[in-house]
Image (cartoon, rainbow, N blue to C red):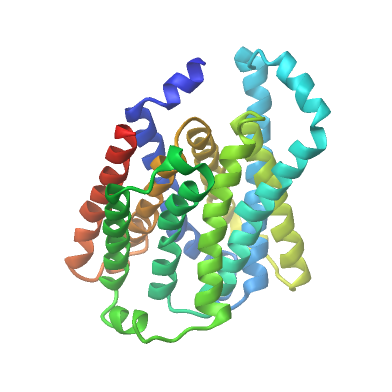
Length: 329
């Protein structure tokens, strides 16, 4: 109960959600740097999936070790009776964890990487940014009156999506033209939209399954399962990760990316367990904004023009509208 009270506190929710999205946003420059250090070409999807799989697999192991450490430190909840009931429903619980790993870590990134190989970076980032809006819709469909789709939520999602669009169109002089050409392909735009749907479906599954298992433990197993799937597919696709080429710098970078996955997913899973889905997932609008700003800082990439800087206030306004509505419910 103490943990629940802490992670339902409004300030804690905002702080943890911002930290999670900031960590995920920092993955953008890390991934680009990692591809260069490990000798992974832009079109080499097999190596990209293998690279991601190793990251998530090791992050899962790290998270599970953290879960065991917390238990030994006396953080284990007094749920002996609940655990006995879980044993009677063991296979259902395992199935839920594996399904979450398949959707949230496995399928999401498979569709994402293949889709990104067939669309421009601008269009891909904008299409992926729709995941926050889809999460709010998913919450309304799955939880009915508990997740009302009010005017304020709709306005908040639209304003937040406008911020995502601006941060991407502002980074390229031809961005608007690339986005609104009207072209559509299943492997490109189609897979990017499917990836966004996987994000929303994963958020719902995470909230559901986390009611029966500790969030940190759930996070570790789903990362492990999803990472293993990506490693297998990456290997079958002929992917390779050149550790010798990467050197010590590459190993430290991989270590930080493992930390990103473990910390961000663990915090996110805890927030989803104790709060309304729409209240938390709307913060995903911050990911591409942080990614763009951090890429500008660490990769010396141009932000493009001052229009990009308007995106952050718009995203924050969208988050405010959705959370103000949730507080009123």
